[in-house]
Amino acid sequence: MLLLAAGVVPGWLVPPLFVLSLVAISFFASIKGGWFGLAKRFRTSAPRPDLFMKMSTGRMGWTHYNRCLTVGASEAGLYLAMMPSFTPFHPPLLIPWSEIKERRRETSQFKRVEKLIIGPDRTVVRIEALVMDGLARYLPLQRE
Picture 1 (cartoon, helix red, strand yellow):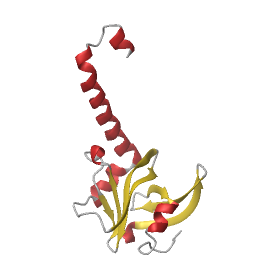
Picture 2: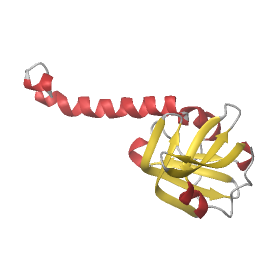
Picture 3: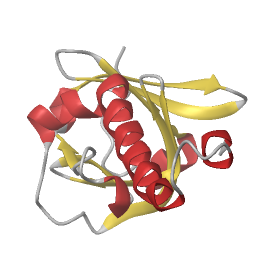
């Protein structure tokens, strides 16, 4: 805004710069958080499972996904998807249960979360415990 007020950036350029910054943030969040790495192995085009919860909160690496995750479960595995505006760098994932190397409950920032260690890269994913409780019939036993 300071550059706009100073006349350095023309007003017509602000909307494209804003959109470009959102795209850049989504891209770097996907890479630094670990979604990009998981998508290399677990990207899916299958429809979301019948059992799912929208607007869930989770954390992957240092990236915090506040009320923008869809978390689902089926016999095939754990389904994770983002709100449509973020899907270019966060494609839907279907993670087979066998790829969850560890699963345990913990308290993170005063909330109960389910901590999952996924795949050979051991990507850490934390999802609200209440959401995971809703998917309990499909969840594998806790492993450490």
